[in-house]
Amino acid sequence: MERKLNAASLQKIDEIVAKHRGKAGPVKLMLHDVQRELGYIPVEAMEKIAEASGVSPAEVYGVVTFYTQFTTQPKGKHVINVCLGTACYVKNSQALVDKAIELTGANINKTSDDGLFSVDATRCLGACGLAPVCIIDGRTIGNATPQKVAEEIAAIRAAEQAEAAEA
Ligand code: FES
Image 1 (cartoon, rainbow, N blue to C red):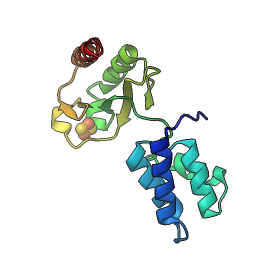
Image 2: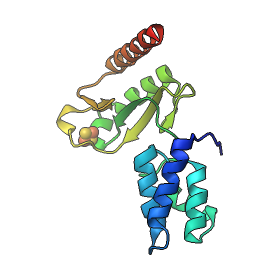
Image 3: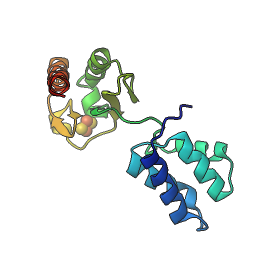
């Protein structure tokens, strides 16, 4: 696994480990805090949590992979959630996933190599009346089509290019 954490992230992990050290059943609590603070669980955090809790890094890794709320990869700058719940699935939300993957280069539940996009498949988002539904950067898009997803991604890319040109 890759190691490239900055000092601020490492310090945050140390604070979280110190806060829970010596308490009962701390592994999941520490993981939860690291996930919330950093958005993912880097390998350095697993090692520190293992050391502080007296369990092996493999056991901590097992917990991370068991619970879907934990991820070992940083999220992309822009997150595309596509609902694959039943109501959305029967309205072909898979086509939205396919289009997002095709245009971003991110694999399902992964982040693109350029770090710009994550494409996540989710369960029912509670908006079945709007199926198929996706959420792009926190905005819910109902009755979504591959075309709409393509437009949203193009708009994000255009905004990113404009931002880069200004910098
Ligand atoms: S199944 Fe997609 S919002 Fe409910």
